Image (cartoon, rainbow, N blue to C red; front, side, top):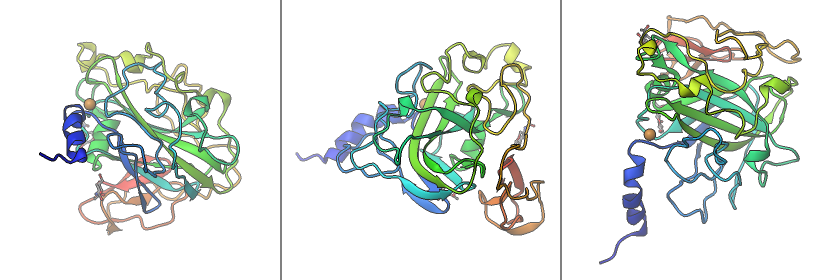
Length: 317
Ligand SMILES: *[C@@H]1O[C@H](CO)[C@@H](O)[C@H](O)[C@H]1NC(C)=O
Ligand SMILES: *[C@@H]1O[C@H](CO)[C@@H](O)[C@H](O)[C@H]1NC(C)=O
Ligand SMILES: [Cu+2]
C-alpha cells in the first residue's frame, strides 16, 4: 500500500490541531501572504512568517519560544514583506473557526538592528505593543472578549501600523491568549516586514519588553479564573504586557482604557472621523471605514456598521 506523506502528516497532526492553531496567513495592504506550515517539512518553505513548530499553546510565560512560537530563528528561505507604509492595516488569519473566545488579542512590533531581520533571533529583540483588546463588554465570566471579536471577524485580527512608527526592519507579533483553562494559553506568531514612512515616535523604555520577559506567570491577567464567583460580576480585565505604544500611561496602576494622541509626531495626518457611521455605503464587511490617517470611504454596505476598533482603525462589522 502506498500512503502519501502529506496524508500521514495530516493524520499524525489531527489530534493536536482540533482545538489549537495559529496565524496561517496575512493580508497586508491588500496583498495576501501565506504563512509557515508547521506540519510540513521546513525544506523549501518561503514565507514572510517566521517558522513555528506546533499548533499547541505555550503554557508558560517564561517559555523560551514565547517570542514567535519557535526557537527565535528565521527560515532558510525567509522572506520579508517590504515597503509597508506606516499606517497600513495588517490582518492576521487564524485557522477557522478559532475555538477560544475568552481572552485578549495583542499585537507587538520589534525593530531589528541592521538592514534585515533575517538571521536575527526574536529572543534578542525589544518589543512594543501597538494593539490590544481585552474584555470588551460584560463580565470576565461570560463577557465579549478580544478573541471573541477575532472569531466574529472571520477568525482574523486587523492591526494598523501606527503612522508614528519609525521606518525600519521589524518583526510583527500577533498573539491571542486563551483563558478558558489555566495556565493561560499563549498563541504568538511573527512575520518580517519593512515599515516605510516618516514616523519618528520611538517607544519609551517602559513600553519595551523582551519575550520571554514581557509577561510573568503571576500577572493578574494570566492567573484570572474566569469561572470564579468573583468573575461573574467583574467587568474589568488587566491586559498583560507593557503599556500601549503611543499612550502616556505607565501601565502600573490603571486598567482604564484611554486613547491618547502621541505628542511628538511630525507627520500624523489629521484624524478622520471615527464615530460609528450608519449611512449605507460602499465598504464591505470587515473593510476599513475610518481611523487616524484613513482617507477612504466611511460608509458600510448594509447591514454593517462602521465600528471603532482603535484610534487607527474602524471596520465594517
Ligand atoms: C457586547 O458587544 C457585542 C458586539 O458589539 C454585542 O453584540 C453584545 O450584545 C454586547 N454584549 C453586552 C452584554 O453588552
Ligand atoms: C476569511 O478568512 C479566510 C482565511 O482564513 C480568507 O481566505 C477569506 O477571504 C476571509 N473572508 C472574508 C470575507 O474576509
Ligand atoms: Cu486550543
